[in-house]
Length: 210
Image (cartoon, rainbow, N blue to C red; front, side):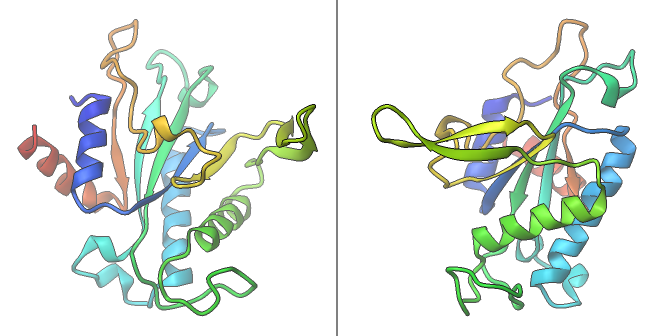
């Protein structure tokens, strides 16, 4: 059982390149959501990495998702429980071997581009399941002539780049909630990794670093 600060310290000092955080309210069971996360992760790797990426010896050379279910309720079907959602931390490799089709500020650089990864993540979630919706927003100028953004229609998934200044810096490596159990005594941080074979490695490292 690990608290929020322990996870944040672990991801901050163990050579993880956490580039994005995804907040997602599920429409399905946790089992089905894991299948969706796996599909998106697989296709993300196929987009930017060589075909032999499943055989990489260093897991840091591929994209990985570190997933935290929040507000679970064992007495109800999870996805029908009000407030149930996932936080996904996205680890990106420092270098890639393929580029996306289309214009980007990264041009021909083979350093991982957060903007390209964001665009591809959005495409993949929408392609994988039509129930995913992103916020519909519009730009406007406030009374002080400062450009602002307002949400017109709220979606069920949000993808933020960690170093985007529109994202709350206090939540940059957001892992799990501060308290270890909810009011019903249920553990809050049933952490898992996509691909799942990395879960044992991370769990072992966490135990060592307590």
